[in-house]
Structures are given as structure tokens and as C-alpha cells.
Image (cartoon, rainbow, N blue to C red; front, side):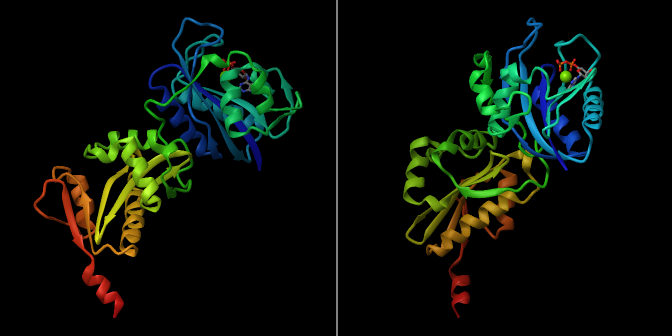
Length: 319
Ligand code: ADP
Ligand code: MG
């Protein structure tokens, strides 16, 4: 197996979607193990064109460098790239940045990519996922090269809307359920809005901060490839538990992530003594209602709440 780093760029159409589709097509032939975050960059060379979106990925593969080039060109064509001049607008550009420690100099294939060391829009995301990777010709790490690169001010973080975390990776990438920390807040907040979770005070930074300080193990997120794709917050007052802000990125549905998150927080609430748990879900949200109905919750007449008693089961478990 060899390790290949690819650079992806798009400045036509739905740029994030083009990059995600390219990653998906690459994944059919190699194992895409990591993708950098996406960055918006001002065009180089021919400047009178739209901003680029750029990302890099790391993949392991049995394909030779030339086979990777052929695959990249097939994907570029498939996603609608027309032959144009160098640096022309394109739905997708896929460059081989590095291939193991190989140095290849052929008329139509140079590895490492000849412009890698001077292009901030490649070095910045590459240093993000592989800071210690050494450029075989320069003998310097990516971390070092990026610190010297010019034009970093033309490379901007890109967060809106965020790339599809499910598609931008192998579909069997592991989902990590962990405690929510305040550094996750912006992403979680976007998720709650995206999912139209009933807006309430529990959304606000100060409120989230309070619960994470008070009961950190009741505030959970699901993380996939570095992106927050699910969240849930639990509260406990006496024996009354409450579950709210339960959300899963709509693009990552169907993997049981919502159930995983819910079971985790439910188990913790019961362990801490909850005998009744109410779920905050507007009765008008058919999807939310169905989810909680499937978990044994019933409407209790209040607009936002579905409730389930746990007392009897606890007694049964005690016997
Ligand atoms: P650029 O990526 O510099 O904007 P193009 O994508 O239009 O320019 O250039 C494509 C040409 O570059 C292809 O014909 C390909 O053979 C050649 N090439 C040389 N080395 C590489 C490499 N490492 N990765 C991708 N293409 C390469
Ligand atoms: Mg190219």
C-alpha cells in the first residue's frame, strides 16, 4: 500500500458538492482516510474568475502514480471538466501532491506536485492533516513550508455551509460520541439551526456553558471526520430528566447516530436516578415525534413534550 496526498479544487457550480463527489468517486478506488477542512481561496494565475474552494485528502492505495493520475483525470471529466487553459475555471481539479517519498519527473507527471511548495492554498490544508510530512525534494516538513509560504492571506477558512461530513469520507469512518466542549459550540449551534430544533434558551452559548460545567457527561456530540454531526443535551432535576437539542445532520441520517446519542444520554439520566424523562420535541415535528414514539415516549398534552416513565422498569430491574 502507498500513501497518496491529493489536492482538490473547484470554482464552478456547487463547489463543495463537486469536492464531495470527487472524494466519493476516489473512494471507490482507494481508501480516503482523511480530508482537510475546506478553504476558500482567491484564484491564482488567471485572476478574473470565481473564488476556489480547496481541500486535500490522504488516501492509501495499490494504484501506481500513473494510475492515480488517470483516475483523477477520469473523475475530472466525469464531473464536467472541459479541456481549457491552465488555471481556467473548472468544476474540479485533482492534483497528485505527494506519493510516498517518490520523486517523479516525466513530461506529463511530476510528483511531488511542482507548485506544491509555493501554493499556500495547498500547503495550508496539507499542513493541517500532515504537519510532519516531509517534502522529499525540499527536505522540509509541511509545517515548515507553510510557515514560509507567501499568499496565506488569500486562503480563508470556509464554514458556510459546511461540507457534507458523511460523503467527504469513507462511509465506514467511525462516529465518535463524546462530551460537548465549548469549542464545539459554533458547529453544534449551526446543527441545531439546520435541524430546526425548537429554539429556546438551551441554545444560547451561556446556557450551554452552564450545563457543560454542571453536568458535562449529559452534553454529548457525535463527531465524524472532525465535524460535529449530532448533539444532545440532558438535564436532571430531582428524578425528572429532560432531553433536548437532539439533532443529527440531515445528510448523515440513516446510520443510527440519533439513536446512539439518545441511548447514551438516556442511560446516563437513568443511572443518575431519573424516573421520568421528557423529550423536548414540537408535536408538529413528525420526524421527531416518530423517533421518540419508537423509544416508548408518549405525548403528554404539552406542545413541546413527550414523556416516558422509567420507574417500573427500574423496579423490575431491581428484583
Ligand atoms: P493545474 O492543476 O496546474 O491548474 P491542470 O490541472 O490544467 O493544471 O494541468 C493538468 C496537467 O498537469 C495534466 O496534463 C497532467 O498530466 C499534468 N500533471 C503533471 N503533474 C501532475 C500531478 N502531480 N498531478 C496532476 N496533474 C499533473
Ligand atoms: Mg490539475
